Length: 358
Ligand SMILES: Cc1ncc(COP(=O)(O)O)c(C=O)c1O
Image (cartoon, rainbow, N blue to C red; front, side, top):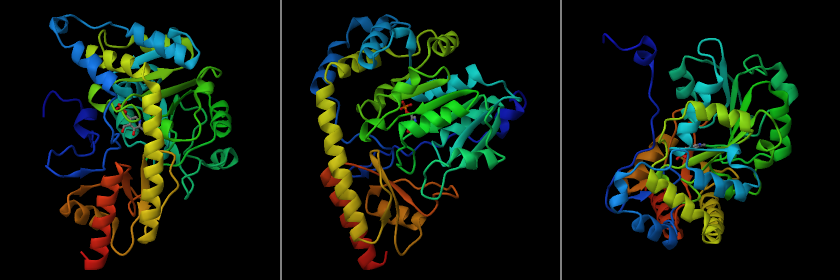
């Protein structure tokens, strides 16, 4: 088609998990929190829906940055808020990577948006596979890996990893970040479900940004609020290319109210973690090989039939999980930790599939 840039013509768009509205469907495919936002957050959002919707929201989400700065022990200048962390990841590519000559890299497998962002920008792509158990390769091994670039303009690390669920130690991420010349984004979308986080690195290293989101742990996917924490110079650079009103007003209201109710959310993390344990044990009992998870999902290798066939068979029983057509994880299903009853429904469906052979 005339008028469309060749790069865009050739681009394969990111494929998000399905959002079907089928009554009775157990939706365990996009890592949403099974619990709603706190009653306080819902009240705050409802109270904000009035004539003020005609006004623009705070352009820099300043009150939210101030509150986040307090929470993380830094300054508002160390924080930038985005329309979900996805927006900020895209901005990082635009702010830190020269098209054509600059490289973006990531470990494989990681968040499947990264290659799309690199290609959209016309950047070079680099990276290395994770180890077979999804741990990070040792630095000595990366030095021997020709496709890994210690001079990459931008390195994106999903930590804990998605889709495997594996968590990484802060010391290991620190050593990795120190070995890299360019900017490193530690994408901690799922970190609240794991034992440790690497936020301290964003406040200590000149090249490290930590990405967080209100989507998963804080039940606000619908509102699209994420943020980066990091060195003021990197944050200021991102801020220059930010759309004027990038974070919608109700999202800011919801995120602010969330920060006033953190104990409520921490209780939910504990519930999700307990259910994750039940899900893992239930799957093992049926012959699935589940990987240890520091997130709100489990990557598991199903028995008897190919993972893709399991996807279809579970769907026929109104259970939706995720399967990725990627070489490293083609034999696995990624299953979001739902409520206890959703997990029971999944386990009942998989038991029935195994006993009926379909
Ligand atoms: C690793 C990772 N990072 C970032 C995101 C995006 O989160 P947000 O909703 O804040 O854009 C996701 C969402 O699936 C994710 O899995």
